[in-house]
Length: 65
Image (tube, helix red, strand yellow):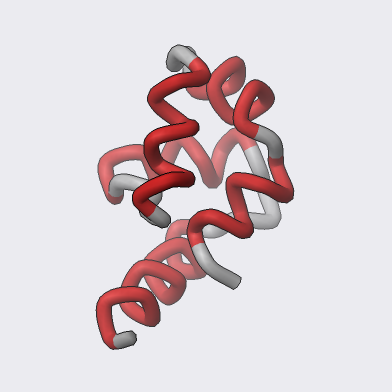
């Protein structure tokens, strides 16, 4: 799963609302296919199925590609 797929699955507005961000910021993440590491703890609290470890694996897989 890629960062863009995670964002599509959870929804731009839902992520933005749960993290206190404007939807356009999350939309930019999706466009860049990136979830910034500084938001991983918030993402894992907002979405229990997304652990920091899982987000790190997705990040590292993207960088290796």
